[in-house]
Figure 1 (cartoon, one colour):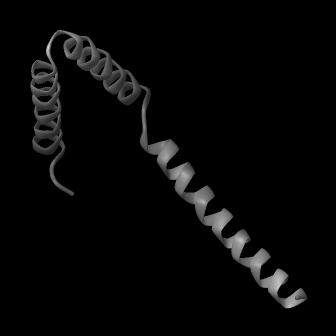
Figure 2: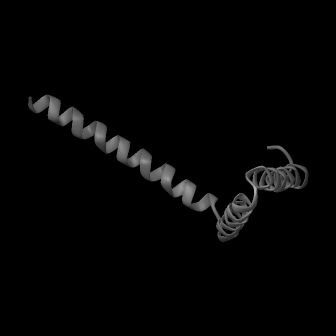
Length: 78
């Protein structure tokens, strides 16, 4: 039983350290501009969804397509 508990504690410790690495990398990847962009896009999408769902999906999809293409063209594919 002691061996099992020791191996489980080592496993949980390794999971915790790898989770900390992934969370810190994700935290550094996002910027304040990303939050404002996707928050504004969400509010635009919801407002248009109240008007017409098809208009909402078309407009927000087009905006995301333009932003994705601009990022691909100006920053290049890595």
